[in-house]
Length: 276
Image (tube, rainbow, N blue to C red; front, side):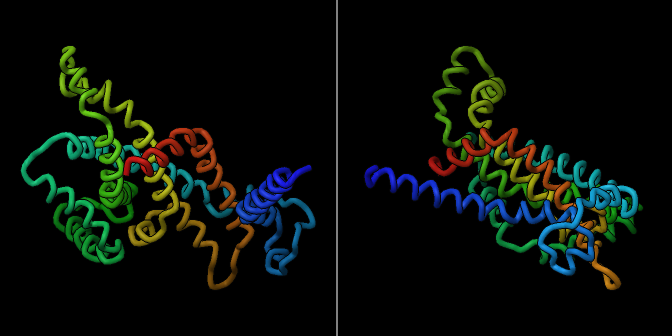
């Protein structure tokens, strides 16, 4: 056994340590979700028995289902709408030359320089005035939170998608148009399939960001999962058992999305790194 063999084994051992280090928080979260609240407070290493009751109580006693359904609906609709508009606008910025295009692109990305917390008060007052003048409620409704997420996630998504469209040679679309395709058909049949990894990666980014978001949900008073989990910590008692069980449940949809779409996500991130 030569030096190369031991070098490879050391590399395998180091990789195993990194994987274990990365997976340990998930392992700890799952193990803790089966403990009683008293065992968690006493810092017991492993549960005395597997308390499946924690998962049942989430649905029976603390109305976790409402938070779960709200998060699914809000994150999905925000992802669909933001990805649709980002794709259209990103393609327009990448392909068409129109007056003010650089200013428009710069203004869109400049919105990311302002923290969302600074915009929240003016937006909140605007929503209050809309309610007074039109009797249309935005605060406290899933629709209002979806509108906020779309507005805040489009700028960065737009620029990500624009980069993928700009990297596609224009000659491919021109060849399709010479063969009789219209501008829309060349976009639909040529550019869109080639930019699909970037669009999928952008959609995953929007969904995960909306799924984990807490601040806007709290200000808009919409019961999503992050806000629901936060409510398990109170002045009288902290239900760490419910928090851990809820954390396991909310991780499942994210894990499914990642494993199903990981090929598109990784290829999209890699392509973006190369093309810039």
